[in-house]
Length: 331
Image (tube, rainbow, N blue to C red; front, side, top):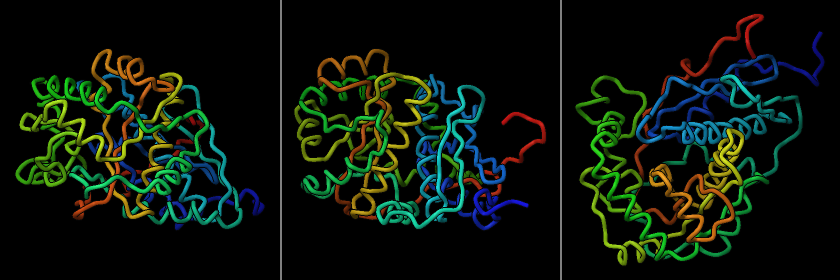
């Protein structure tokens, strides 16, 4: 007989975990994860079949996405009054395993972030004028929760604008990259007409210039460096840095990013993520050297006051997110 200390997850608890993970942000809304429930343990399985050779050739953003899903999984388990610990296999397709056991009520801050999961959207538009309040920014930075991740407000926006402007022009002219992005865009008469449950909705992209654009398309306006610096200075930017490029570092950066994003949602703020320029060869090294960042940048988060509602992205059916454990198989 199982004791309460090792009670398996009930079906309703599993359903709550799956729903939370399904709402995590991911590169091109590719949702590169699955869940495997084993008693009181939950494996977050990385989907190696989700491949973006032009945007994410090393799979770094795929792991960042899995890290965001892991943050949601942890919050959902805590909301179910489960104590949690997390382990990270060194190889295989399991990105992380969340071990749960019956526990007490979560902290109010964790519960608030959990309830923000369903409200979070990618806001690829211009924000209302004015940066967020210093006290709000402090609470966002406090939400990082990962000791190996340093979240910093980037200095020298003029230099950052110069670097981002260069990367934007490169990607806008890259035919192969644009073809891949177009394939992941849920056009009204494209992927969506075919019943797409992933990809980026056309309505979510808009026609704004950088930094609001997020994903650079052929038609994305490219402001000059001076104008782009003014736009960057008017927003609140947070760069997530790690010491190295290990699998564990990418997952940790994704967890930290999602926790900050959910905290921003709690504060009534909107946000979106820039990773596209960070995949340009040599770009991150230039950013580190010229901005004096405390590590390798994994993602740039922009946030502010929204001026309109952002549409939700399509999602895979919840039933597709669960994989069955094979007796005697790999764990």
